[in-house]
Every structure is written in structure tokens, then in C-alpha cells.
Amino acid sequence: MNKQELIEQLESLEASQQCFIHGDDTEIFEKDVEALELAITIIKEWDVDSSDYLRECTECGHLMNEGYVIENGIEYYCSDECLHKHITEEEYQRLYDNGDGDSYWTEWR
Ligand SMILES: [Zn+2]
Image (spheres, rainbow, N blue to C red):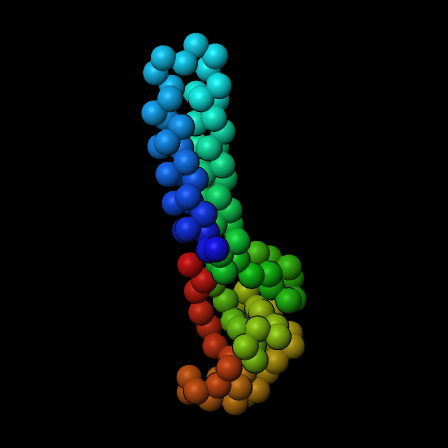
């Protein structure tokens, strides 16, 4: 089950529990709906956090949402400065290979 299906299931559960709120003096159904709303919120936020939009710079440890990918993610660098501590411009150009290589600058969103 993917996250979207999980959210849809919780939302349909929430909708069915919502039908019982009126005329319920115990507030149990109301608490159910609150709990389900919390769960949906958590899953939606977790969805963002666990998506691929942060990487850690191999050199300085900075979290980044854009930067260099080296050899498909063996290494990541946040800046030219960090990149060139490990890889010369010539080496990088060879790895980059005019966009055909597995090393490039990118953004994770
Ligand atoms: Zn860095």
C-alpha cells in the first residue's frame, strides 16, 4: 500500500466515523475522527520529509536541496568548494560528460 492509498483509507474511515458523531453523547466517535485527522496529518507531513528532497554534503555535512551528485549518489557536494576538495574540475567534467555521465548538479524537490 502506498502513502496515497493509506491516506485515502484513513479519510474514508474518518468519513464513516463522522456519521456517528451526531447523537453520540460519549464523544467516542468525535475522538476517533480527531485521531484519524491527526494520523492523516502525520502521514502527509511524513510524505514530504521522507521524499528525496534533502541530501547531506559528503564534505561538510550541510543539508541541501540542490547540489552535485557524483556517480549516481556515491557522493554529494553542496558547492564548488566542497566538490573541489575531492574532485578537480577536469575530473568532474569527465564524470559529467556533457550531461551523459552519472555526475551532475541537480535540485531535489
Ligand atoms: Zn559542503
